[in-house]
Length: 315
Image (cartoon, rainbow, N blue to C red):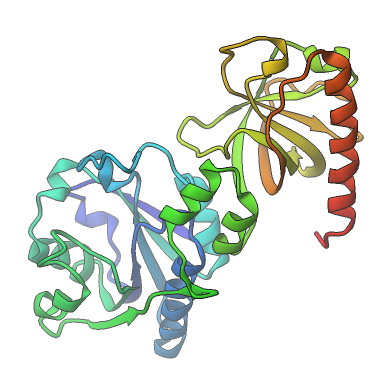
């Protein structure tokens, strides 16, 4: 898959003359609803014997147009992760557009002309709620007016799972509450974050549960406080583990939130390694114990439960 980064006004030399089918959207998380758009676009592209292109933004529009209810600096997927998922779902060419004030000030007609027509789109495929300007005048219902018969339009309807709309908003809420199980259901895959292994307090070693302290990508959404069944990728190999997101309240008040992972059947120093973490299952919330002994007993029980969880799971 080829990736082209565009900054408005973009250099026309970056654009090829190849006709494409274009899937449009922010694609935050590339969840089941987004996958429905990409699958429909892939189907149309195959029918037309054209490459499938997709367009996304490097950061959320809420960075330019702040919304109190939405933190546009935290993402369900980084651009890198989004690109991996796009390729998995059949995208041949990905445009990553920098969402700036200049881009945001384009009229709907100018956006359509420059980011659809001039990018050689023969067919535009987007979700029912896709917008390219103020919703009242720049939604899918108005797109044919701006298209002026220069491309076809395919609108993908709302995607429901068990009667509920699949949305990035719901997935973000799930993660905040620690419900990675439901988030994964709506994503259609296991939620993943990445980070750097750094030095921590090394307290886990004294408890018999050494942990890798992960400094996560500051733009990534980490699940809420709790204990989780995870897999962690170190180099090219995946390991099972027990992740703790919390403040280590047993050892003091007002401590910062950290991500620590006890990696099963692993005893190597990995400081400085970039790792990936797949979040499979929420185990329990954070508990404050009277001392280390109670914590150790609980960790032993957690490890047993997590090993059993993975033993029952087809990975």
